[in-house]
Amino acid sequence: MTTAPLLIFGAGAIGSAMAKAAQAAPGGPPVHVVSRRPGAPEGTTAHILDAGDATALEGLAGALPAISGLLITTGTLHTERYAPEKSLKALDPEAMAEVYRVNTILPALIFRHFLPRLPRDRPAFAAALSARVGSISDNALGGWVSYRASKAALNQVIRTFSIELARTHPQARLLGLHPGTVATPLSKPYRGNAPRVFTPAESAAHLWRAIEASTPEDSGKLLAWDGQEIAP
Image (cartoon, rainbow, N blue to C red; front, side):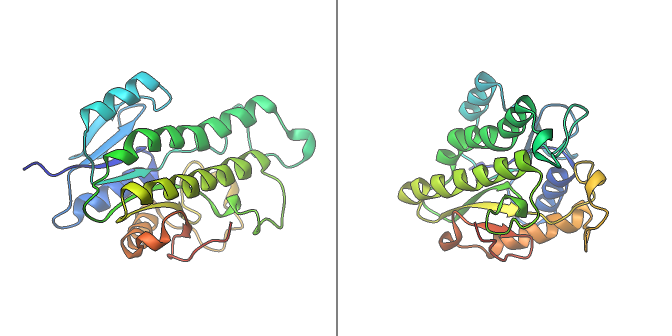
């Protein structure tokens, strides 16, 4: 009997580190990595597609009738075209729509296709990288409205889908994960004052421990890298 794969979306720094850590775990499932361009870690099964391509996403879902777990590590904070807003006047509706599309809509679509493929008869997990700045109650600084709003919306997507998932997959948990500040291209321009910066490998190790320690009672929550719940 073939073991259902662990499916990871994103082959960036954190996604690749998570894939490598999963590969190193004894007795773990095969790892499949989905990304828009080549770059998946050696030894994984690579799928090159854009999660925004509905036809390609549906095709992959049809090719993988069962998965053992799901992890979404994709996201955006800045590009050459946009950056986190520092003031009201910096708001650009087109940039905001793109940040929301990448950080909220695409994970929601991935969940739509792949949550039903988790096993119903044993423990399983699905998770997406979110961020502490998506917490409304924790927002004391302002700024970064597009990124904050997109992650707050992602947290709501996770909470909402977790309720539905519990009805069909009672042993599963659906989580949002805050990886901390990690030394990646995404955080590079903004991590100067961070009290602690993790390497991707360190962050991956923390996140896997948080996932492994979670239970179905944690489903729908946003968990920090140390396993502590972050208030909505």
